[in-house]
Image (cartoon, rainbow, N blue to C red; front, top):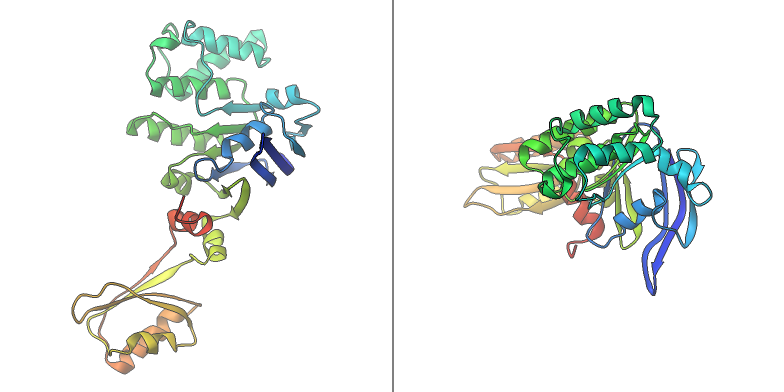
Length: 309
């Protein structure tokens, strides 16, 4: 669905995007993450043909973005961070206009507009002026214009911005539904949202892609992979050294202790928990907890882009 090679964008002396390579298939949800100013929005605008690239190439839905931008735009639903709305139009007028310029046939135009409004929770708002809507409802209108022509590719830049918790649940369910038969590229600052929705995560930092894969794969590559929390009711003073001496253990980190109770963060290969249990039994260390943990997306993000972000 997307094949981009060497995407580069400069604004004067500032290089916003540097040699980005990106390949996206025909199904699923791809989370596009990065700190502010990393190049997320600029990359999305280049892929949708709204911003020309200085170098590189991009083929989207089988069409070259540079050579055939109209064909690309006809097959992409794009929700920018701030939806481009006309405040003097009603919701119905705006979506009908959007459907027309998107090439939706007249015979099915009203039905498509009604379906889009129904999906994003705008039924009954046909005559409301866009200028009178709250930010959350303007965001819903933006989503509706992105899906009104039933595109095979959706690119959503902060789609849940301004939504209340109840609206968030609805939009997340909608994104999952839409991804059943198309691909969704989703940019957001809400890491939990990406963790819950996305099959794949792409992380961009300072204009370059620094991570691409599942959260588990990225965690392993960044050294922030799965770990085990060990809590001992009591232990020898050299417990950390003895744990580190186990062949199955790759790292031992002493955590805050409470009196005689000792806590450790352990990383190791398959079977390391069994080896730890055997060592504890041999040394007479009472184990209070031996709990596996999966690295969070936040830990992976910080490991890849640095704590300064």
